[in-house]
Image (cartoon, rainbow, N blue to C red; front, side, top):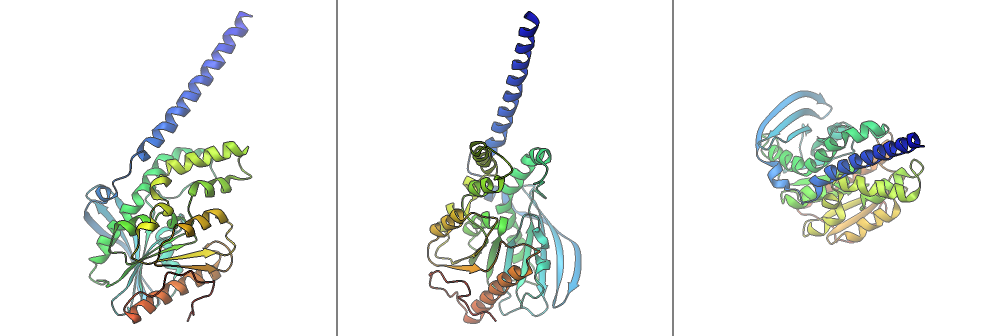
Amino acid sequence: MNCSYRMLRLCLGLLAAALLCVLVLLVWLLAPVMAQPDFAARKGELARARTTLQWSVPGGRVAQVSLESTSGLAVELALLLPDEPLPGRPLLLMLGGQETGRQAVELLPDTRGVAVAALSYPFGTIPHRDSLALALALPRIQRGILDTPPAAMLALDYLLAHPDLTPQRVEMAGISFGAFIAAVPAVLDPRVQRLWLIHGSADPQQVIAAGLRGRLSPAPLREGVAWWLAAVAGAHHLSPEHWVGRLPPRPLVVISAAQDSALTTAAVAQLHGALRPPFEVFWSPGDHVHPKRPETIRYITRLLLHRIRQSVEEGAFGGDGLPQPAGGVGLP
């Protein structure tokens, strides 16, 4: 009897210690996102820029560049410079999918005279399919997500001083994962003249919970894990519904997928509801953007580049702030 009692106490003690360790870990990961991040301080000043690789592509050339800030922030980007730039040398800075990063420039076979830059995210690759690896990587991922807005602004410091650029107009596009973050640097950096949010939504917690459906149950546990992951990622500081209302009078274009399997309908509607004029909404046919869906990439890039070229030719941004139906703009 005494032996069984001691064993029970030992098991309960070990369980309590394990729960305490988990609680300490949870609090430790939440601590960095309790206060509003100082994105400007983290950006610092551009201390070093180094071109690591260059190659030619049809109609232009690509350079991979490593940037370092006085704050210690490091940024990896790719820059595609067209051989025949449009008047005013317009620049498009892209925050693409989480796994695509700066390779997004390689998905644009013809930029139609627009210089295009794309960033790799500071956190690297997220190991979605390995729970242990994901747990161990959470501090790195958290720091990298919070570093993305200052990384985009540091990239603009470099790009706007580039001798082959000197753009008279700058546009920023957040695509897929990037659409959850791009509104922050666009709002904070007045050099961005138009923002695009492509296949994104509001409420990352809801999107994470939907992605866990079928993998984690019961529902209260799934919702709790989704809340914690969104909080650790700093969603309450970054999510676009908290920022898009501060962008006007600069224009915003949203492209949503008509059959988006990666986002919830409610989260997309919440983003649309947060928009303030001037804005436009387009619906692309099909599913969420992905490198294996070339028809979706083709629709998005044609619309993006057509509107940039149109703005250059008109000398001013068009759009009356009213949502447009799918295919509501004439594409070349």
